[in-house]
Image (tube, rainbow, N blue to C red; front, top):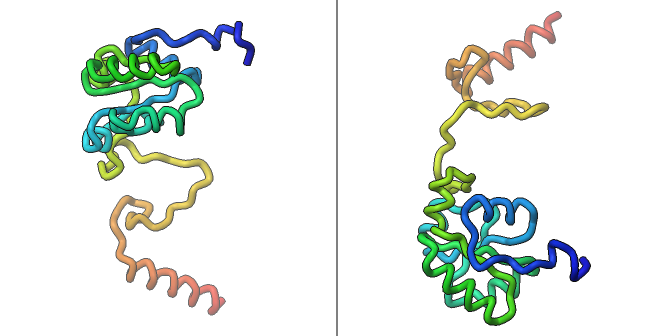
Length: 160
């Protein structure tokens, strides 16, 4: 990448949620989330990496050759951390208003993996139903009933 290209510009000190979304979408910045491990596990920006604020330099050097978008809960701590990184010559910005700003703008997040999906059934083209317990009418059918009907179908075919 050429030094004089538009992409070679340093990231601003802070960005709002929409600017942050664009930076991430365009591959200009990777998200480093410095909130607590519990907060990160509960909900986070899709594709973000969790890092303790005290270990930020190691996280940045290990995973982020691009710029970094530092995120905390309210934007205060991430602004300090991004400033420290910039002082070391890193290309870092912070999310003004933090994760609260991101969710306040209804931008996409990754939910807790233990959370149950609530929404319409997802149809995947070419996928085969692997026996979710519902028959064609939506009624639950026991494994025994499915096994018996399969056995009787085989018997009928053999008798023909």
